[in-house]
Image (tube, rainbow, N blue to C red; front, top):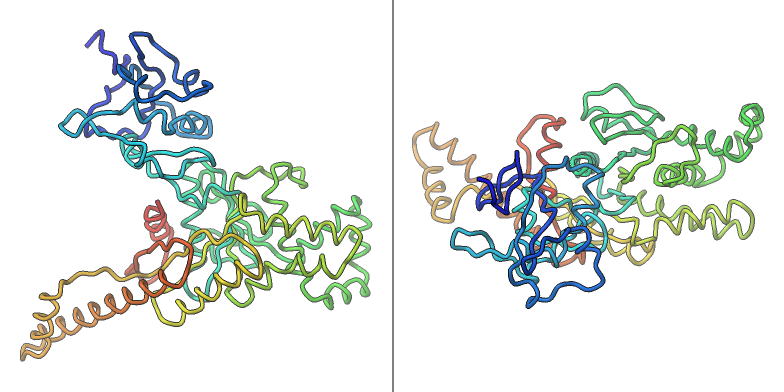
Length: 429
């Protein structure tokens, strides 16, 4: 209909119940005058409630939500909540400043939960706003799967993301049903790459960056004395591995052909090795008091302990031993290593399928005479008991850790594949 203020040619108007993931207001009317959203959002003073009377959204566009749109989404902070100040009676939603507590795409932005829903966007976890994320935890808890799920979630949000495995592991490539990636940055999906960091290849790359001449590097590596010294130096492989991770996280890459990434996710070693792995740069900086090794190790340690740009996620299972180890791991990471622990993921949580009365009825059927019914009732009772036990461990974990705890469901599949990783990625919002 011509003359409507909430619509432009070729696009739907903003109506209750319409969730279009690309609807973004570009202009509004204030006191009868049309204003540019960009100019208003960049103004010196935010609008007060008294000055927002008569404020209406006027035009909507549908740009693709890629990097070019992140700056525009950044403008949707507390001041823009008044653009959607509608009531619950069918005319829309009331968005108060108190509700605008969700973390935005970039640091400094605050978005309303309902504003996200109005735009049809699932907000990415605050953890993925950082440049470097370490995923660690007890062995066998699903670290690689969670790391890949985080990578998929960040890639869907338009972030150029790379998932790094250490010690030449190839678990991520198996999830993507891809050939071994090796020490190469291989694109798995749109905006998502993978690399398996080989310590020996990292050493060769580091020496080449220092010597600048490939022939000298090859001659050095042919030396038996150098090979013996490198193999005998404790922690050297971990140091060059972290050095490669640091290089991947730089906007100004040292490797000329290297891509620039918004986010680097590291599938770090398990609990015991993970703490020593993250402490390696500090150890080398303390041993080498002066020289390039000292300065470079300090630079790596500063990146790891930079709470603004580097974060850590701990993965646990809803069992007594993994919960105990995860709580101890968080304390050691905070106190000894000094890293930021942003999130604890409790993986493999069974669903609660039955209420208390239904469980009592199942227990009665489990003692019945019908063999088929008895077997099915016993299986259901066993799963219900396991789900209750897992809730107990979830409560223990939340009491013992400081970081927020996010639960991930148990996927009833014989082998976790890319579809399973996508399911977990949807639950990360």
